[in-house]
Length: 257
Image 1 (cartoon, rainbow, N blue to C red):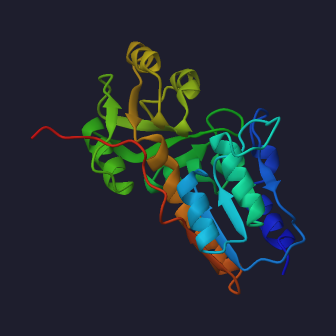
Image 2: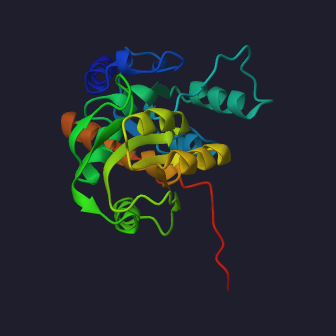
């Protein structure tokens, strides 16, 4: 089987029209008519992921983040991205990225996060982007923070407590979604759950009375690539598909002794 049925399946799950206008999504590298047997999913293409894909003889990488993210003028081994592209091309490994189409789709990452928290009456936060919904019942903010931590299997997370407790209306934006703060405040969200935000966005959230839960960019999205690997494997039982085992959270924390 060539890659076109899988590409069609991914674009059914995550229609490309849901992607943000600035994004680079879809089939980015390779020959869609080439037969394939082995698929690897990951959050981001890194040298470790490329080495894993080559070693495992993967035919296709489904990476959440586009690679390359922006257009390149030359591909040489003198730059990190050029070296990775050269290795992928040499090994005939194709690349597909759904990125913000995956974020925003009806069964995408933001909706999965909303369901993880048990939100009801969910709707896009702005047009097709993000999500906002209601908890089944109001809970103390600290309880919500702990629920997020446990749901994403995190040893820690960061938060900005703006004094709203109990909380009930929750906005969601996976990854770097600080730009959703204004819309979250306009829709009277008590909390905005996101991957990461700039320092001044955190200060602005306090002034607007919106609490933030910052799970980390990696944690807010990587779980969905593991789920996607399972979905692909179930849809195409004759191929092998799994999430990268070499990809890890790049940010580490050191506790006081």
